[in-house]
Length: 328
Image (cartoon, rainbow, N blue to C red; front, side, top):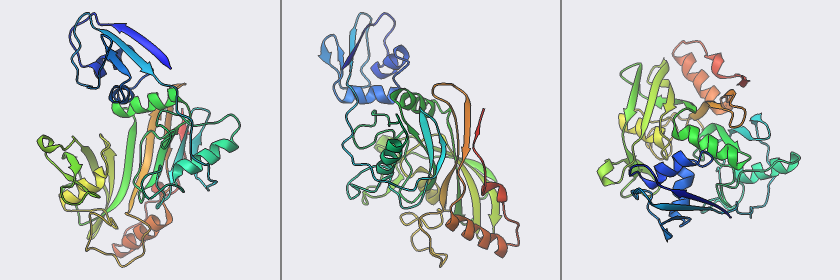
């Protein structure tokens, strides 16, 4: 276990923010986890509040536990790798694949497949920051949302990528098909999100004073399709089900969404909601070069999009189908 010691010399500040400024290698979210787990002491007493206001002269100790050994069994899986080096990889996740183990999904997750993949790459591993069940997982995608997801192989990469997401310098863009048609060509949805009061599986728009967390989604219509629309989304925050909840609240839910568009059907078989994490843009966590990766749309999405385009007498948007990753 690594131990860091500090003496507070400046003005009062929240413990999590102050530590994030003192230790470049630790993201604020990682620091908050250390606080919650009792690994931070102030004046030799354990502090479990990330909002604790430090005072001049306070002595701060941070105990950083060694990464937990992985207790999951690798499972060979056919993964579509969009980018990979010794520090991170980016995968095009298919519909139906759960990202990490959770109740009801003890095996067969993306994490299990990643562990098998990394075993096959000599000297490769996954970051231990996410713990035993979430090694390397920097951000998540819903089970039935497809597309690009970044995974850290080292703790340094994990911390750097999380910091980019927190600082909003990592660009995450999605494309989706929605029922209905937004009234403008572009817009911004700023609606706090929290757990649904009566249905614990669902999320909902919940006022912040009632526990909702700030959530911001930017959107742009790429192509009107009669009673539907192809829309691009850019996440400013990353709440659970954020795009799906925001779209449903606006009156144009994601096509095929089993939770937020019930009662609507295109009478076609879909493997999940028609929402795809299309584009990731970030800085390499070690070399600081720009990485831009676009994930090809899944077959179901392409077929449905082509059908709606034909019905509306519109040409296909082929630039979304076969993009190539770029590194510069």
